[in-house]
Image (tube, rainbow, N blue to C red):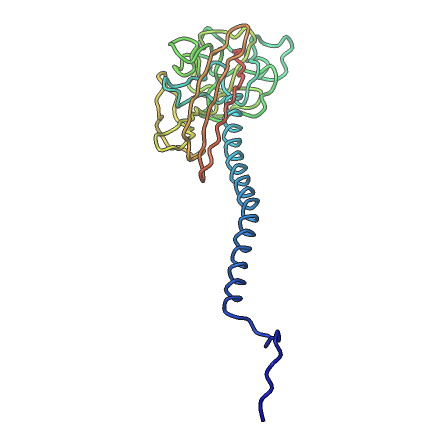
Length: 275
């Protein structure tokens, strides 16, 4: 008896090898297209995050430098000739010294004016300082320049060492010191430390602090340093001294590079220069 043949057009429900290859190719193409579509926003998000981190790092550096510059002793800022270092004397506290004894003295502070004729060992304040000066800090009167031998705290002719026992209303000097010039506004500044920002050849921005002031700028100064930023390429610091009609101007330009991203910042800082 003859076997029946399947009807034409009937299927056994399977896939041929050609059909499987076509399906695999189509799935691979769809995967590549989908990956390309999804990769663009992912890469864009990663780029934005890198730029944000880089911008935050640059902003923090600029903010720290700006803060120090605005707290600098008037007329104490100086930049190196190559523009890769800028230096200042940090003076976060200031007040008005007593020029004459009070008419009705009530405390020793009111009877102790600053004497410019002798090496004075202490003087009272017209109003209390924000905080008591610490021994080893400096009292500066009438600073006019960051170079030269006169009225220059870097050279030391108007910079006296603060001694132990100073308070917010009375400053002790040890040893005694004779200030060469009176301040028309009776201003006295308390300098806490010398600070220098320096861009090294290794692409690092350093902050030096706590070293002894010197008449001639030293780059780098003696002592240790903290790292402010890495990957520094562009680095230009300039300072234009002020005069009686305008403030001093510090210009800071820094370029940072990280993970293939580069960011350049330029900032101008107006600095008070009234001694």
